[in-house]
Length: 452
Figure 1 (cartoon, rainbow, N blue to C red):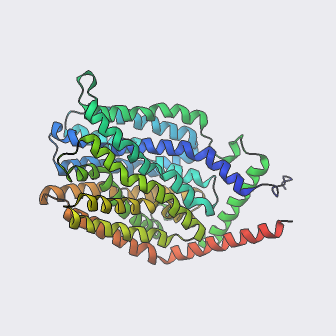
Figure 2: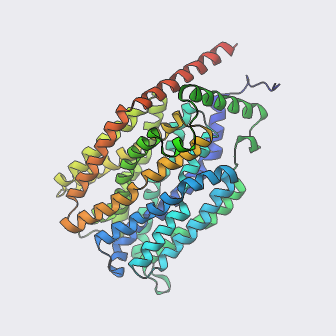
Figure 3: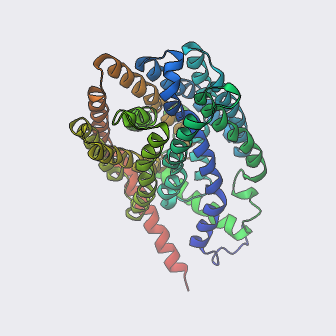
């Protein structure tokens, strides 16, 4: 029986301390990760012409990243649980950084297709590794906010990469190498360098954190264990195959797949959409204009996640943004001749799609624990990220065959509407939300009883 007194632990101060220690480095890593997977959209402004790539081929090479990611994501998450977050994330950084830099030396469509697939293989597991890692440190009531703080890296990546890529495209042709190649080379190097930082700074779990007191470690351990027991009591033990491809996992993967279709179409085609609004835009101007909606999204997604945690509600905090994003996509073809309204619609779509991240990734953690969480989180993300292949490839094909983006935007909107209907109607999600609310009510009652 433990003799450590946890009654003096200030839980709010402890959570703030953990956020300060854990989140900033993860955000930086994810910014680099998303830049390296999405910068092909900016390079395409010059690369497609140099390599003779049409819209359909570009959609294919952009999406092939997700195929490599899909194949290796679940094994990667299982290995992270065995090897430890620090070593495994450092390994991922080195391999994806090398492949990202190598993209700057491709000579044709086939080489580009191969290197994009390898980039997905190299980066596979990073995101679900981090989502799993966060469950080691934060109670359920903090999950949406914490995930949103981590995933604010996605819009911030575009805020940073869009102007930077535009400036590189307009100004960097060192050693006679085309500027689009420097986009990949310069933006791939930080991943390799940051692997050293990860090995020195990242801590595998709270038990190894020297900056936590014994009482803080015990409080956190007891809190997380109580949540795990509550989930197991309500949902029962979830074995490997159910966590890999059970009905609940597959339904959540389908919802997240729909979001992935929209995210990756935005990531890879927004620079070209913005370029199509005016023939007078330079690459630098395109970069700064593209960054605008993502800056708004970075702020809103954190606020929306805080609201979700405050209400302890997830379904509608995912469903409402999906409906808003679908509406924005349907509006874009109607306002295509007006630059201001087009950018407003693009902003609505971007903000709404990114707002879903925090609340969504709180859903699987409502019923997945332990090894099941490692497998389930990776399975949801890997299956869903096939939308990162289907979305850009299908969008590119439709653009190539019809000559504009209208049909593609309508198709993406339809997928989002289906996802919104699913997430708001799933019975097991309602049950899981009720379990989380009951656990939080019990926790508050216990704290109140133990407070002098």
